[in-house]
Image (cartoon, rainbow, N blue to C red; front, side, top):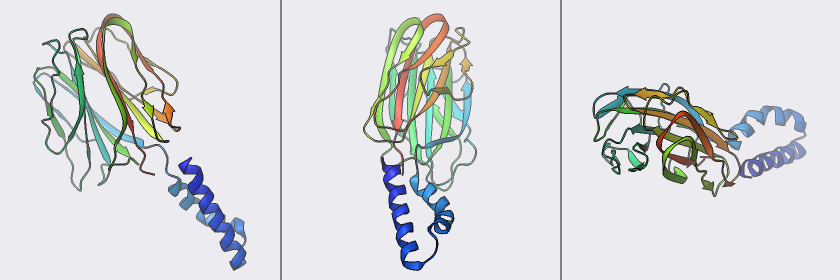
Length: 250
């Protein structure tokens, strides 16, 4: 709806200018077409990403390509919770907001979220957990509202199964980018299959030790109820996961 209203306003101004100036409206529309498209904005874009796995408690993920000041940076990390019931990550990454973490005795896995607004100079991010086997994604998102990043989020755990459902979030604004982070108790249930209308997997599944991770994305152009994401594994085991809706900056 915001996109429609902005384009309607620009169109009205163009027609008014044509009327008072005598310049054909179609000529002005051609000149202003790129301006209208830029003003329309839309769903934030997952522009680039990097990944890493490691066998120590400190995991470093290289910066994704193309970071510019004002971009939204998101880190999604996970592991096998060797102390079931504990969240193995915490609010310990300098200058990053801790977006949440989940892990339980039934899932025997853990996943966490961090985010920040990029400054003029950004490099790798290092995340420390309480276990020695970790995986992580470092995402660069453009077009997000970095003053109000999170529209909605939901963190969950599931006990052993082969069909894992990552419950949808409900948004209160149009044009959200929705991400999921999925951590599985094991690296032997591959290949994994991501399902759900509009959902797509980001890159490849990360495998390390007795843990693995998957990230997905979906454009949610209209506010309201979202769509569950599914991850099918070939073996039955537990999982920890979340959905996150990111507000548009338009």
